Amino acid sequence: MQPAGVGAFNKRDERRARLYSYEQKHGKLDNEYAKKLKANKKAWMFFQSRASWYQKAAIWWVVSAKQEETRLSRLARLIEDSKHGQTIPPLTRPKSQSNR
Image 1 (tube, rainbow, N blue to C red):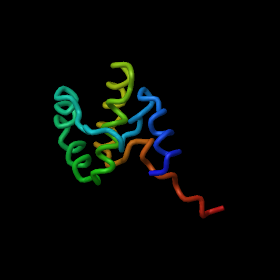
Image 2: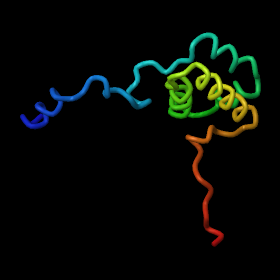
Image 3: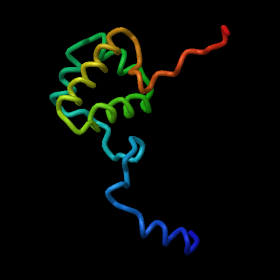
């Protein structure tokens, strides 16, 4: 690494480091949350069938919320969408607008 890069790295703000899902070392739901997801068989099967990047990002979406109420509502949304064979809105590709 060049000296300028080393200097920038050393000046980084640790509080802002590792904010993104791909930077997180753990990608697991708490036992209580996992039990709720696994309790719905259709939702669990759909979630398990998704790619690992989706699972990790969806879990991070749930657990990264600051308030418990928000975490629970996101978990409920994950379960509901998974039950219907859909991905959660933040990870859903927008529909093609080819019919203009």
